[in-house]
Image (cartoon, rainbow, N blue to C red):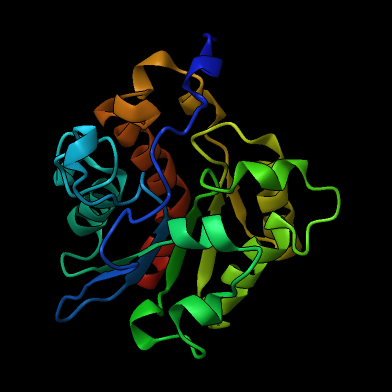
Length: 231
């Protein structure tokens, strides 16, 4: 255990993290579609004024070492070399969930390009600080989180929910409650986020942290990946 409290301030703005929210990487002949729902840890465009010149999950040293591409690489190597995957970057939703719905941000009807067999939900840290002091918020984070889950639900896909890299106990509890309600997996990364060596620039996971997160996520989703791919 360490003094992990020093890593808990999210010093990166939730505004304008990317030029768009949706990034889809299609492949011909793919057996499986995976959607990563996250924030700057999942994808953050270049931010030169802060010294961030990558276009990948913050704060990996390159695209190939962020957790999304590490998980996809594992799927390619073991199960489907043509896996289709996508990112729904939800920093705007985190920041604005009190006032907007998923439908208002992403389309009244779920777009085909956001339909996936496996959905990994890994976000929460950009929730406005004011929310934590509200006695009767018009909407809870848990409600907003469930709304997004249900928006992405096809009735046939499988959801995986992760506690955040930043320690936000109330948000983690809300996410776990949603996971439990639908009898879905809740991924514990407590040991990863408590380690000094997993934290990199901007209090985001560096290469060590990204690799640890990817290993944990793949460990949990692998049985389903294997089943979908018929292995």
